[in-house]
Length: 135
Image (cartoon, rainbow, N blue to C red):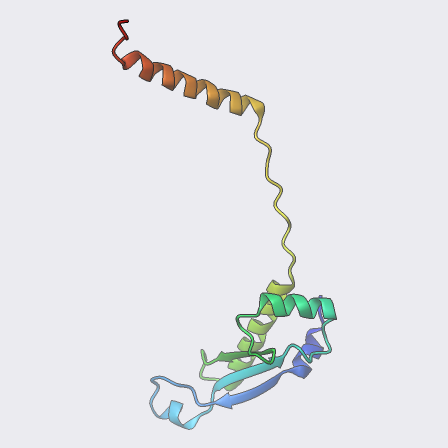
């Protein structure tokens, strides 16, 4: 599908101090990882794949076509880095996957006949409940 090794070479990482509770450890260690990937200037994907990625991921991209992902799930910087890379790959694979076009199923004529017959029976039942017309 695409070369993951070359994608990893184009990524840039930044370690940031994680937010939230955690006491001294959070205040001392930069364990949160911010991954940036410039999709428009990437040489890994063909132009058609780039167009598809830009279209599918447009709400996650900046105006310059840069994808920014962060991860601070773990206390380990290394683990956060692997998690954010996995998240990037799953995002890209999901965006590149071409969905099969749904072909609507044809309703069998017997089913249509049965539905119309039951409607007619229901209408007759209701009609029999009415007072007869005396003209």
